[in-house]
Image 1: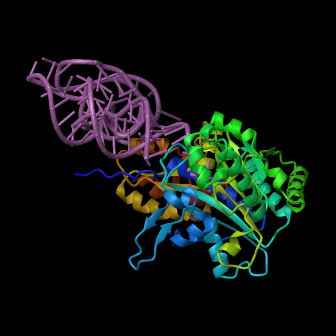
Image 2: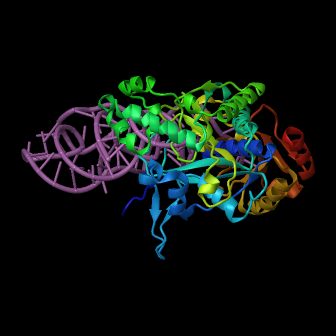
Length: 426
RNA sequence: GUGGGCGUAGCUCAGCGGUAGAGCAUGAGGUUGUGAUCCUUAUGUUCGUGGGUUCAAAUCCCACCGUUCACCCCA
């Protein structure tokens, strides 16, 4: 008999982690909502051409990391490797950003065929945000601010640093790329193999190479700054001024570039040391040319994506052994001494669930000796046990026993029991 | 795609040439309707898969698969 297991790079989120995911997702949704962003739900499958055009067909993501699928009718389809292209497509298709501002967010799984490692899975979850129709630098700052607020609300701000850079407008970036390519090419004998390869495919990416020899060549390379127009410089300066006004610390990194083709002007990355090699928790920037590239009218746009898997990983790393059993603190475990009492108890449990909003009511459906059921109540982390047997039924009461604190058990009417529990945990 | 580490009970691991162990977890007991401790006892391992060497392999060799970390890539 074959034993099945999850496909390489795909993983299960188990119950104890699931609760943490929910908490973090809720925090993120709340944060986005308070900034006036609206939720969008996007399909996981899109036309392959959308990503070739949007992300760029020279990028590693499109070139060798896409999950392509057979569509039966011949159109090449892909599991989305990122969300921005889809979001722009949807905005165009439904006129969401036509002559107006749109602030949007979405969440969901993305797929990239990479070698899995810590913080990098073939299916991973992102929360992405895209804002259309605002060319002002204040928007760039707002996007960063959203991240900052979220990380602060999760008490992670001390563990994440913001790196920021500008890569100028599309023509400026092209001019710079050319100059950089020239410089690197004349030093090609000192470059490492990977950088040599990227010299053709994506020269900008060489800027953040970790290779020591390559770094020396880069140090002598022309700087992006000298290729920027006054407008571009001004835009970036204003972004930074906004950040200062918001008291958001940042680190200027002239070598910060993004791997996707569509970025222009401001690019930023929130990074942590706590996750090893995959330390980027959130990243984004401006992409003023993308809407046009995908067939829309010229529309300024900017956004970012948070890697939820990494955010959860970081949260676990930082908030170790904290609120352990907190989730179960309002658990009431119902125990019946015999079958008839069990049938008597089940509708009462339902009534409790209606009357006590913040309480979890579990009925022991396994039965058995009372001692056994009480042991299960304890192991489930119950705060209270409710016990019903023949005598309780006869008297029309329920026995309520505290499991976590000292105190006597009491035989109470339903109403008295509800009052007692309300007073304890609402 | 490249390199290193690791794969033995549900979990954490020991064993490293003579046909499998511990701790935790789980089940049942320790009399009559009450948990955590304690005691007794039970369940559970085709030692990742497939080859090879050997009288004999969880133990040595090879391949594959998985996993993990790093390169790379990026959220």
